[in-house]
Image 1 (tube, rainbow, N blue to C red):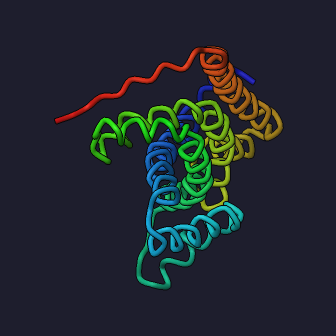
Image 2 (cartoon, rainbow, N blue to C red; image 1 turned 60 degrees about the vertical axis):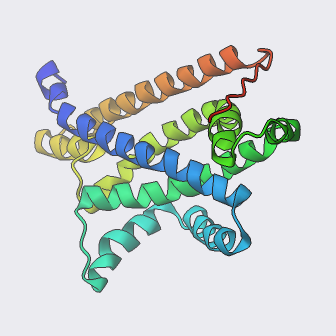
Length: 221
């Protein structure tokens, strides 16, 4: 395969990275919010979130994608293929991350909460400047690892016609009668991205494991 042929995959790679970035930018804050509500919210709020997150985790990502892309038009709501992928994967990813964040928030030592209460730190400030930073530190590594899986999962967009990396690879391969070569190259791109993310997760783990806990309480007026 020539370099010129390999460069034809760059638009597909750009689309894959766009889909992945959009999903993660939506899912991380959504997962944090859902995790907080699961941990701190009243029962009337928690139970609907439990149902939604169970559905998000229980449905295969491809089924969720098809339900959004093919099902929503039945209700006169049509999304583009890329938007459907982002919506479906954001639901699935946020549902998984909600449990990750919920567990991390619950794992923050109870003494931290009691200390801030004793100091009179307001509830929102207590959560944003004391509890959440500690929880986020706990979940950086698993979130990066899950992001690698999401990146690979974006290849499902090919099934609804998005010209991402897999779709472009297959299309170019059929035109040049070298599908195998293009798919191997696409796999190499996915592998490289996966290795970068796993390296980042390992680097974060090395920096955080074994460090002494240092807590700073900020009291806001």
